[in-house]
Length: 51
Image (tube, rainbow, N blue to C red; front, side):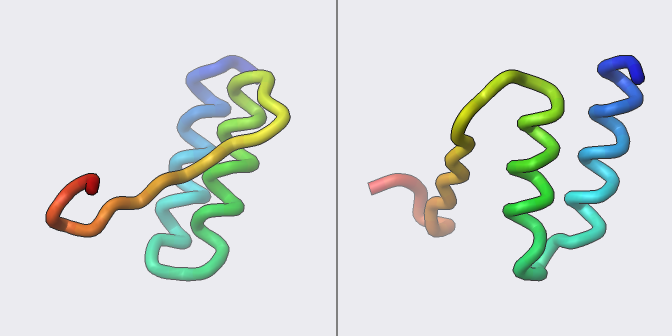
């Protein structure tokens, strides 16, 4: 599977889970398909921005 097809599938699967507990795992697992990484961290800041 080429990178664009994989990216499109990953984004589609993750966005279908927005607002649900499965969003972060879906996005993290999808990122692992696109790049070699042992660990993926997602950092979310409040609307006011980073501390």
